[in-house]
Image 1 (cartoon, rainbow, N blue to C red):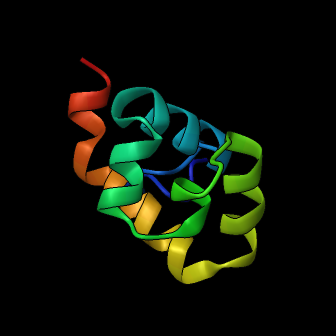
Image 2: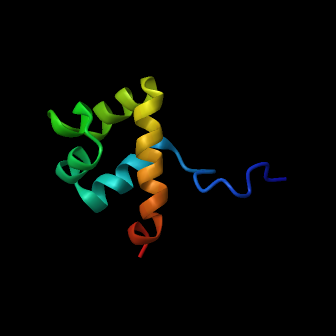
Amino acid sequence: MDNQPYNPLHGLTLKTIVTELEAYFGFETLGKTIKIKCFTDDPSIQSSLKFLRKTPWAREKVEQLYIKNKNKIHK
């Protein structure tokens, strides 16, 4: 049985979230929206994942941006 039926991030990996956000917005816009160096200084999916896995406040901002734009990303 599914324990998190109302969690919009359930079943998504951080890699999927970052990859979809980057594909939709690009690193330049992500860096302007969420001011963290992993999106502005020599950005890559791998470096972003490494930083976000260690930094809960930044990960939460990325997850909230994904939830807010989920419908636009999946059109």
